Length: 376
Image 1: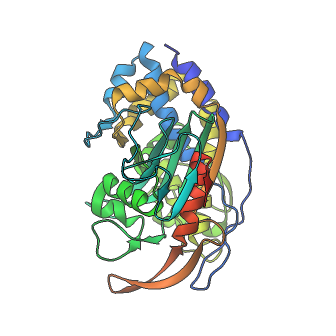
Image 2 (image 1 turned 45 degrees about the vertical axis):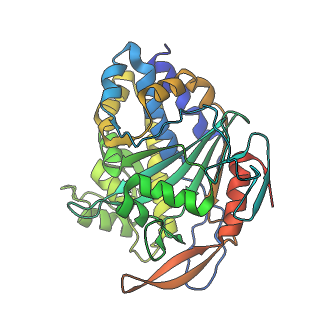
Image 3 (image 1 turned 90 degrees about the vertical axis):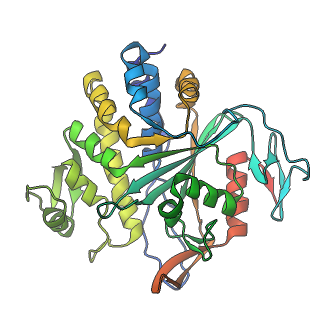
């Protein structure tokens, strides 16, 4: 079995396959073009790396680590990479008006599927008050594509206004978790985008706070307005921040990642940029951490990960982790440029600004991206 060192060393190589920059913009009731957006891939890769390291570390105390993750048996019967039977009543390539032509692509229960591609929905959940179920402020569909030797991450914007199975009215996509848990969000993604989601992983934002504290903080460059917000609202007793670069504690970094209501960079797109800043700093520190620090982080954060991936499935993925984590990395975002309109709608009696996606265009691009198929 490959040691923790090997998994830790290889798992971070993928972060720097490509470097992008992004100019964040605020959307309004008037339709505007979204800028090219970096997917918050670090979150997804961090989750998978934690799982791979835990499984790969059996020679140390992997069984202890694995038992600390929260496993949910939701009745999934088909194992990962097992052959599935396509719909007998369909052509195997047509659903919801789409015609799909691609190697290995078929319809399973009305959803597009490839036995050599695993789609895992990774949900970053934050709660805003005591006893709050929380909302998925970060949603990423991670596609492990063994057919084309690629790891693909699709970011789903949380303000998309879509139909939610079981609800009489559309709503923001991130509310699907609040009302139906991870299974409810999976059902919503499948219903709107016709992609078969094989497994899911939920990570609380508390996990990131613990990771940061275990690593001795993260280095972030702040504006004066950001520093003032953190000093007053983060819950950290130290009010030591001002404009410049500082090492933030877990509480400080967590609040920094949630800042929206400031005069400069106060929109939701800049909020996701701050999350990327934190994750990039985590990656930088993680790469130079020793095994003792990594094991400490795993021991304290794995209980904050909940998944319906079975232990044998995780071990199976871990057996090939060196190969998977070095696959070519690709990323996408839904909705994309020119695939949405910013509109005001009434939700629970309140006027809300949302993203209304062009579902036909979004479905075509997502199916094409994940399965590398021709879609019309």
